[in-house]
Length: 307
Image: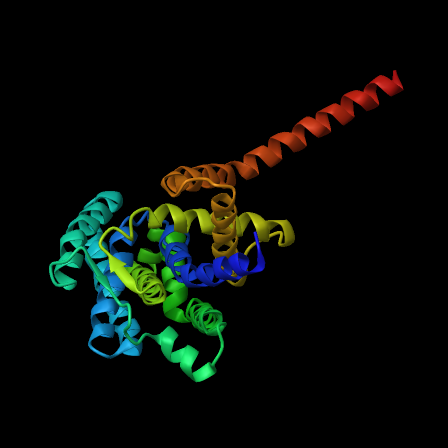
């Protein structure tokens, strides 16, 4: 890979970091496999494109966050108030969002932003550099990571974290578990939607199928980051987990770029993603098994020498 491909992959990885952070909240903190993500990512993109076309590219990001938040609240309400299985609740919302996303885009399956003013064209004009996209990505990720880190140490944030750890304990402490889940999933999908909005403005289009497989991509990025951070940190806290989300998103994009560089077809990318997830998930077990084999071999070797 040349330098331009690496920079492009890194820039894209920064925008996908928000997706990974959203899954970190739902998948790791709340321990909920939220499949709403595939729909809320596209919802954020669709909303952002339509608001951008009306001449408000910056406002588009905030509107996308609100729509993503509403999508997360619907899924959480199905889970908490109507006792729908978490996976099924996510599937129901995701399915409904497919039609809603088409409606948002004016009954079209895709909408283009070519020739329109976006936050990236605005940044390029004001900064006068081709690195404006990278700068936007860094600023966005740093700001949201700091805000999320601070939020998760507030009373509300700690309550959401406790809900994911032990619902019974939280309920016995007179904390509304249902409200914590609704707020948590709303926040998670707001981040996912903003990620979709940034990607749509960066790529200058929104497509109804662009959110397909985002759950796999987000979890892959999250697990890759955790594996890499675990090499350095013995026990991950909130700060380490947030850093892992950033690192994992960028590394995942670099891996995908490397795969494309060796002529792996775009249609095989989902297979590559699944393999990456499988390897990342299996890494702790593989590491432990190899370590046990090495220790067993060393003990046997030491026993033979002593004999």
